[in-house]
Length: 425
Ligand code: NDP
Image 1 (tube, rainbow, N blue to C red):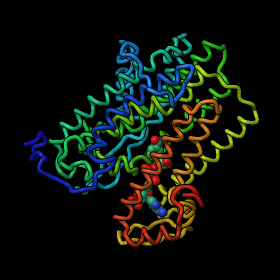
Image 2: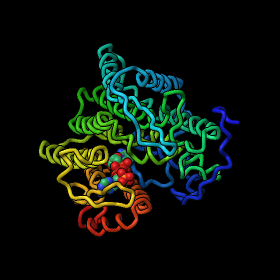
Image 3: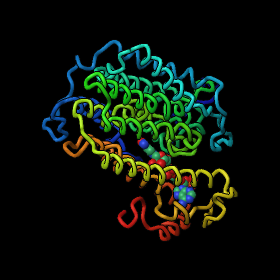
Image 4: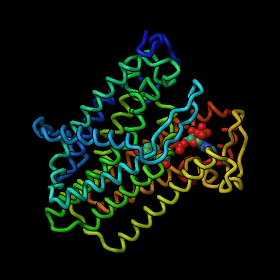
């Protein structure tokens, strides 16, 4: 019997299509992506910063070791576990699970961000050498990768004691490598502490802006003041993170929470990939200063503003429609019925392209790279990677929507022919 008094679930199998290249992807990605993180960080600090250099050089073992890094990382995670448990903000319910229940989630990530900003300000006031984060980047990333592996192993093992209705449908193929990678258990919890929900938006996402700020402080150490390019990168990415945390409740209806199990793919993405690759531009700017004219800065600001507007408005419109289709802000929109009883929006933002939120996100991604100029490809890594990710994610979502809504989805696709980029894709 399992810890919860239920039979272990290792005999339950779901015959689902494997994603991310199946077993081969599940073996290669956990090796290749951590090396990519270390490679990119090493590169952003090198004078050449050439992505195309061959053979690619990885940092030496010694460059990855600094006893301060694991202490800082674990302390950071512990701080956010503590903040998660503070009775701040409201408590919200997730979508109905397969057993008919709903889980409760504290909506207090934005408080976590505010406390983190207050702590950073205090440290700055005390004269703490925040620019040292630049030196610590590689050891911190190595520690985050190690924590990702350890947490994923723990999640995989404990999933065998979860009741079968608590497993993700796509994460229980019986192939241990694939299931470890894609995640078996949907909402692993220790008491009320939801591990997936916690990792999704807190230590990694807030850690990302703290690292960015460390890069800004390093620039101040080196050149006396932060550059306009660095200020733009820091502000844009802070806005993105603050927006995600301000709208934290919306994460409860995303694919990650509703559909995907919690395995290496999400753990590594949340704890290592996002904080250490999304802000590469800031690390790049420390070693490769850029002068930005006000005209270019205004153009980049407008681009980010437009991307943010499309991203926020389209996400809010769908969330509002899914939560309360009778709300005045969405009642005027045209919809089509589906056999599930749910309706699909075919006008407004979701009548413009089938994923307007991805379009907005990509415009912002471009605006984060432009302050770094055109001399190197490296600062464009994020927008290139993100385009691939969102095109792939869009295809996954289409598959799931087609399976859910059948003919109604076909009708929607005929009505709204473009997926992400109007008249292009
Ligand atoms: P979406 O918010 O795009 O949600 C997709 C779901 O919306 C579908 O499965 C369907 O679910 C519903 N839907 C689709 N079309 C319609 C329609 N016409 N009318 C009503 N409902 C519809 O999912 P994501 O989780 O992929 O994205 C959320 C946000 O997160 C996006 O802005 C994305 O850019 C961002 N993101 C950012 C990442 C990052 O690393 N920075 C990574 C991934 C996402 P149902 O019908 O069941 O409600």
